[in-house]
Amino acid sequence: MTKKEPGKVQRIAASIQGKIERGTYPPGSLLPSVPELQAAEGIAYQTAREVYGVLQAQGLVFSRRGKGTYVGLVLGKILRDGTDRYLPSARSEGGAVGAFDAEIRRLGLVYQPLPTVIARERPPKRVAALLGLHHATKALKRQRVMPVGLPEGGEVTEVIQLATSWFPPDVADRCPQLEQQNTGPGGSKSRLADAGYAQVRLREEIEVRPASPEEASALGIPADQAVLEITHQGLTEDGRVVEVGLHVMPRTKWRLSYEWEIGT
Image (cartoon, rainbow, N blue to C red; front, side, top):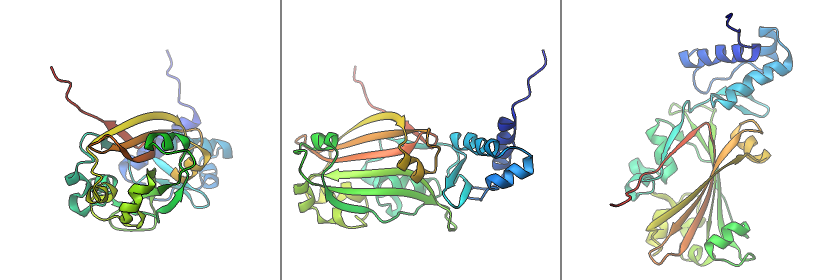
């Protein structure tokens, strides 16, 4: 039986993938524009767009509106170890400010945070319920877009997570560092512990869902690509939820790992 030749989109995408894997196109490099790819390959404009769509779906490239398509800084998946990532020693490892910063440092990349949006607002109803708040009560919000960059610097960054954390108003009042841009070594969990709200138990729910248009734009992924949403809850000794975090991550960039004892 004659082997069928891959279609143009798959063939050209495989060629670019090979160049990425061989380092011809190194991480962070700007790829040919869609019109340039169209001209170089003698293909239709829409076909060229589909080529980059295939590569985006594989997590190999990301786009920036008005700037172009870049080779991903993170090639492969980041292991998010839900078992150990929130231990105090892990959150502050090497001077890291929180678990995400520590994970990125271990990859040899640099977390290049954008300004955190800090405000007192009504949380989504689901978050208010988890925090035990009336739906009209304003909570403290810390909303972050989380890009990473190469250690040698440069202007190119890749957003690999969106995160919004919510805290009850009375907890925020007793922990003023939560309203600072930089919460210091160990991040917000360490500051909560300093204020008497140490989290001794964590709970996470994971959902796979389509990205919203705003999320897709911020993450540089196709509008129809799925994301992982982790609803993270931090509980104190008395069982109170003092933090709810909503983490939105491209499914092509992250792998989740959990381990626990089941007894005998």
